[in-house]
Length: 191
View 1 (cartoon, helix red, strand yellow):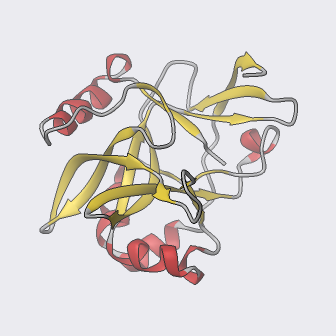
View 2: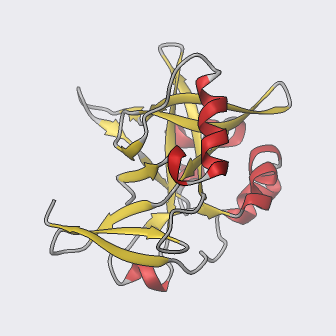
């Protein structure tokens, strides 16, 4: 489901650079544990150039106060709310890991290693009241995440970021890719 992720500029020089570029867009993104509706750093294309900016995480929902934060990779092009923004406004969320909860409400942090490494999550955005709001794409979990939860974010390798952002054919192919192995670390129980 990916209802939270980490963005720790102090933990990694690559994430620090992304943070600095996001701040140059005029607003500071949230750091630490990121929650729905937080202002997040995202990588997008604008006028055919790669750009780091900030936007709120979550589309306004159908009920007052509701946020839609995820879209399923398997069905997003079938849903009118997601199909057009996926086609025109793909984005990448730079993170230092994400969280999932098991049925016992134990919280697990996932990354490639116990030390925070850049982890790139596929997403897209759209405009609501002339403001951009983003969504994270989820997919079937890899073996590690499956032991905790039945969904996980769609992860991109660094070399896949530009094709994801700029090439619709490749973006569609990436929707069905097998997710890489990760390390799971129990963070906190019953939060």
